[in-house]
Length: 507
Image (tube, rainbow, N blue to C red; front, side):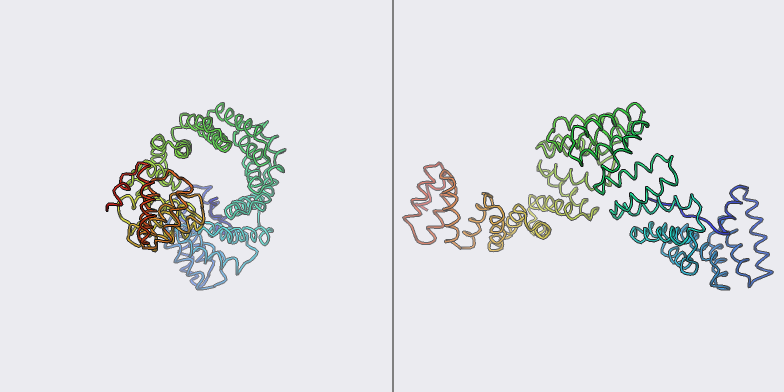
């Protein structure tokens, strides 16, 4: 949650008066009077602080900064000067400098609510949610005497938002609860508290309150949140009914985004239940209802990808990407569709976008796997090998990753290295026929003929009509100077229709 900076103390009062008067001429007059005051009393920190306040209100931030620094140079304990300096730096976007200023306010004057609050806001802007949450808590603890009810409400809302950011949902629910006491008529607070409880696995605690509010409001979000509670409790029929209510409420209110969101949630639930046809209909309806909903198109495309219809997925996924070009999820789904179709250049481009835009390890691994396959298809085996190595590091238990790493090493001519990956792939999935076939080829290429024989004998035992494995078994035997056994294997392969085996004895 992005909070606004709070202006309080003498400076806050000055802002309030000027805002009420609303006259820039008054601000200029204040600047002139304040300049005269500092000329008369150049060693008065209050005079310099008032000049800084006047300059800041007049939009002269750099001059205001100089005035505040003069006040601090005269008296380092000029708390309002530190505070004003923090406001200037925050407004300039120099959040580190603003943090230093607000740190000094709280260090020198620990009971100032505005110092702790603005320090918390600055930490939130610096994306330090844990530290921001702690600062909001200090504002509520140490600045309680100087805080109004609105101040405390803002602090609890800010605290809850930062706790959500660090997934401390239990504490966030408590903070939203305190805010609700201060503002019982706020419609967003019970929803946010309920959402925090759901995320904390305590949705049933909020169900009675949410149901009561749902009956009195046209806000679809409460019905959608109730559906989440029922899903958490395993009551799927109740959840489906709640999502139907959410869709209807949003439609009746003319809220196209809300209706689309409800349909997307319905589709996700249906897909989780294995009702793919119903899910596709829900996502399609959502896309029709709200032309700006990238989520609807994304989910529709994902359904086609996972359902083995990658060409049908391209249209909705490309539309989703045009609406939300920054989403790594959309690009990953596109990359997967391109990969399945065999559009290696497009898969490569989309996969690289994902790698650049996300820090999620699983998404990174999936994207690198697709990028590796695309590079492999283009014949760049060295680059493909590097990508597959990264995938193996991220997914050491993936037989498929081991297989593709082996394929790249084989194409590079490192047959021994390829065999190591194939061996691991077979260990991870003993039923992986493709990995076993390639393991036999790697053993042959690296002249490990006895090992190759063992692989191919197992393959022909599993499938006596595997003509190619009979053929390769023959070569592994021939290399061990067991010509009679080799001819027997080639004869079996030839009888199964493998023409190369028919001429192998002559060759």
